[in-house]
Length: 65
Image 1 (cartoon, rainbow, N blue to C red):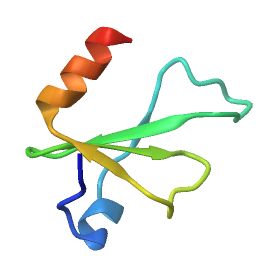
Image 2 (image 1 turned 135 degrees about the vertical axis):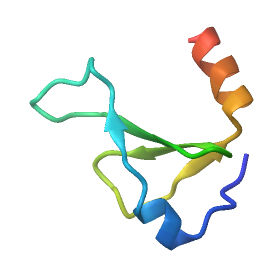
Image 3 (image 1 turned 90 degrees about the horizontal axis):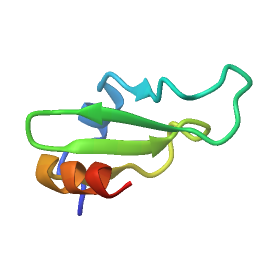
Image 4 (image 1 turned 45 degrees about the vertical axis):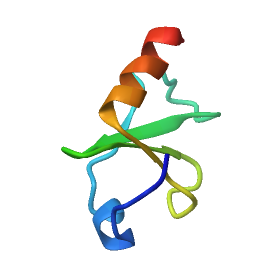
């Protein structure tokens, strides 16, 4: 898993929080998709690291959790 998108591309993505995230904040992740990858980041640190994985890897992860 690696991020092959430029920082400008990643910052321009449309990010989504889980529908199960509460309004009170807390520990949440955000997800954004491109044709090549699924990007995941900490919603409390939007300028921090971004994990990028193929759509197939993401599907496998979601299936397991």
